[in-house]
Length: 317
Image (cartoon, rainbow, N blue to C red; front, side):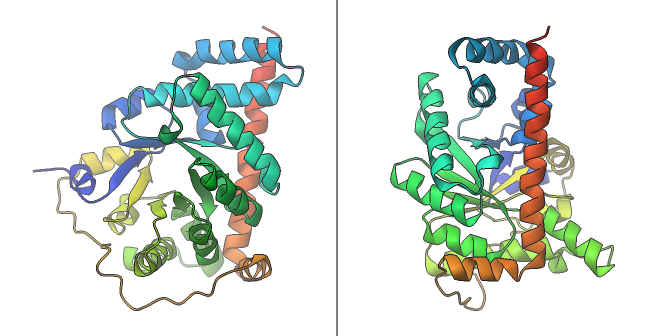
């Protein structure tokens, strides 16, 4: 019997949510995603030690403010290694501390693309990950116009998704598991069936809206807590999945039914075009999205801080 992972590949582009080359080699995804948390984990792997040391040494020799340069050099180095073993793209995160600064995000994004190009990697194999704040969405809009494609991440609401599509973002990453986490914490309900899971329903609504209105922006569900959530989104454009859940799908040979289809999107979904005021107002009225977006940015910054301390520690060896 064919595994559920292989069945999923027939209807959805499978993306590995890891920087672990062994896992990527094993599951052979099309694309891979990274973020500060995954880069931090990858930096602990022995296979990346030479790259880490090289990033520190080069950055210290060429820049007085070497730490941000070193962070990006390491991220690009890990991304380049990943691109040796996947046929598609790697997503590399822009410093989360710039999430509310459009111009700084654009400048940092262009710098990352230049680093990839200097490493022999074409821009069409890279996605820049940017938090889906108003400022981040505007940065993505400008980068897309420059031919640099973006992955708008930390997306928890319909408003963020609508604004991202209007901005022409190449791809969005709506988070499934973190939405469920919030609802469990605030509802007192501990178990949700896949068909009532608020994270699953959020992605389905966004997917259907995009297909109804002909948006080209790719929907890539992310942040899964279990395989039920993944199976409930079979047919989504892309799904980025951790190695643990990839393994679970690979070991299951049951039937996997398609749940999302571009020609079957249900009732029409209305949405007015958002300006900055209406975006901020609607996001503010969504307590879950407001809290999870802020928490996600803080957590990425915390892991960036940990990684920076690790890099500083390399200078004292």
